[in-house]
Image (tube, rainbow, N blue to C red; front, side, top):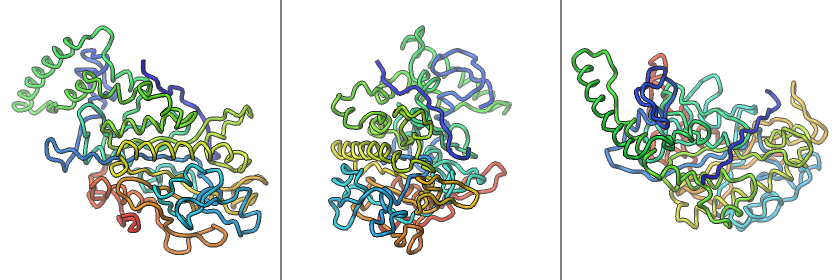
Length: 452
């Protein structure tokens, strides 16, 4: 029996192939109408890889929606006035001089396995697409995972290159392929997406193979029509790959959390199964897995906002609930990867779209913060680990009040340039946008030199 989180949890922050498909993968009905099928998601694969070449590097992106408080977590100011430093105290980690919040004792044990960017510069608002593309909302650039899907394609025919587990958490964030095409949307293993990974109850494996042969015959006919009349687009091998995903148990097994021992699932903690699922997926061959690191309101308060990090009010009570869960999930993920020999092959990013205002109870112009809350702030943090990066360090620093970087800050484009480098992708590559104009993957392609 497959075990998944299946409920989509609604919530709010403060501001608030359109053609006939011959073969509908999953239900395998002939003549199914348009809509995005599994085969469509496998189309338009890698540019730069020779046939059979496999690159096993992968990235897990943990988005912390709403803007987690840098000054209460990884950039504490214990000597600042009380309205700055807040209620929490720093604790030492296993890296001398690297202190973090007292609510993260598990990460304190393994600080040598990750690096923290302090003074991380963002736009200071709810722009989740900045985290996935490096560009502002209006630019409509492709998400990181979509670029990886386009450039490298799938590492194995049994699994998609890009999987989003966002539907298993709370808040959606931008994961659009933009001008790269809908084939490079992330595969979402819930609802119709998950149904497409299993055979219809009335279709046997033998029947699937027969339909594969029928598809090949029709492909041949269509190619002949293309050659002589040029009126139909030639079909490629991605429907066959989609069939491979259905016929092979590898994909279904990768998504099956019930195959994990109880002690492993317990290690991740309640509400953190998607972190474990991310590990299973990259281990099986998925190149990019994204997830949302927030936890639902289960404290009986009736709040719908505790599941994100947008702490305009009740900053400290909410962080007392959120931070330990993140601490446990990240600790489990990082140590799990190490135990399985995957640390060098899988890079981890955990960050939000901004930080929180250093002064408790002080609102930004046109915004709001309760007496016990922190408003939006463009200075934040980013945690990076694995992938052969140099960990066990703090990169950058903020001023004594945690308001801004003491030097030139790193931005999300620098973070993404570093992750592209881990995967062996050149961020200076270009793709034509909808108007045919070439667009660089990133405009600022400087890597974080301290990490590489």
